[in-house]
Length: 365
Figure 1 (cartoon, rainbow, N blue to C red):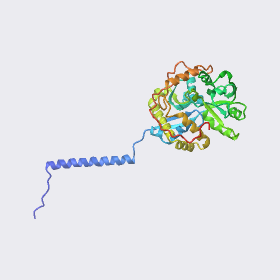
Figure 2 (figure 1 turned 30 degrees about the vertical axis):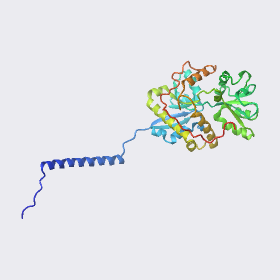
Figure 3 (figure 1 turned 90 degrees about the vertical axis):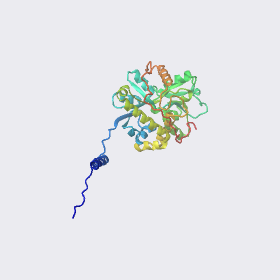
């Protein structure tokens, strides 16, 4: 019996077989590498730890920061945020200078004061673009505008910024300061004095209007609010700030944090109820009615599509200069000869929110 034919590959067949073998081995190796990637993913970069210090205890004014955190804006930017609170803007800025915080929410006026004291702090985002400073009175026929306060008794905390702004109102012809009877009262005495009729008006902030309105309603009265911004006195209020040293050392992180904050704030303006619910979830001790009322006010102060200026969250040089001039006229507040270093628009992205305004009652029904 003859032997079966033996197949002998030609040199070309052997070359092809060798190539196919190598290709097969490479494919198998790649497949194992792919599986290994899913089973043992490469370690992710650690998130940057950032501490934000609020100007006060968490409230309606701070809803966007908690919403930005809960909605993942900071996480997507590679940031792990810790939100802490201070008892005033001065305390927040002090924490910044002591290295206890990377960013703060503080009053712009306090920023000027600290610059005068030699502290290198820079505003990197406008938070409250509209001033909350206002005069509260109970609705009555003889007071319908600021000029009507001439001859009336106005109470304020002696060192309050709301009171310090009255010379600017006088310069604009909105009030005759020579006829105003000032009464210096501690913060806790202002509301009772107004409701009981011991004074005619209070210089305060619209952020506390809820407490005044509630107390007035219990007495069968109605609160009337005269915003100073409507009279042309509209300095910046709350801003996001950091130290110039941190900017110099971590400019990439500063840019990422400002962008995440701006995007989260814009989203909160567009989804106000969702933002409020996110805040209440992580602050269960907060009173929903009060926080809701504060958030409605804050919402109107952060951004208005009709507002003119450089854009959402950005500083206007002319408004900064006007504020410096106002502060320079106040003998009890130090200020600085230049606004260089006080603010920067370099880190703020161009965003135009489309706000959905929360359900609210007109300020003066």
